Image (cartoon, rainbow over the protein chains, first blue to last red):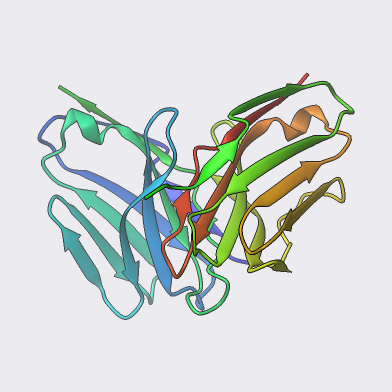
Length: 113
Length: 111
């Protein structure tokens, strides 16, 4: 089955700096890669996703890149703000199948004011 | 509109007891998923429903775990003879397509 590795497990940045979180996946059939943000005590919420037919996607301060050949994808947050502090999870699934998500173990991002 | 809801929000039980966790998906969502989140871990897939059928139960950790969905809506996850290692947050999600919408979870503590 699919296996998703996520790094780093914790990341601390100063407000205004950029943050990068990286994930690798094992199943070359995976073609849908969402990123979820989970604030303390809250439910995970989708912040951005990318499909395997594109290499990069941006939404304001957030961007995701995908390298299908290397089987890795990354989340980039620019101009970080304290409200970006949360746990971020990457995931992979096969769209058109059952959409079962295989998650990485998460990255605790702390943005220091 | 209303999001995914789960009940109870917290459940404390004694080892060996059975528990039932409930999920109310977003109205009209045909797909429903159960995940388990243990401390410091990612979300672990348990089971997937499409309508009332469960074509993928591959994540259920043992035969003590079962789930059903009725009327293409509400789902119940049952854990029999609970063990301490079952302690976790159990999350439900529903979807129409790719994006899964999560509920707030049920925090289960087995003493």
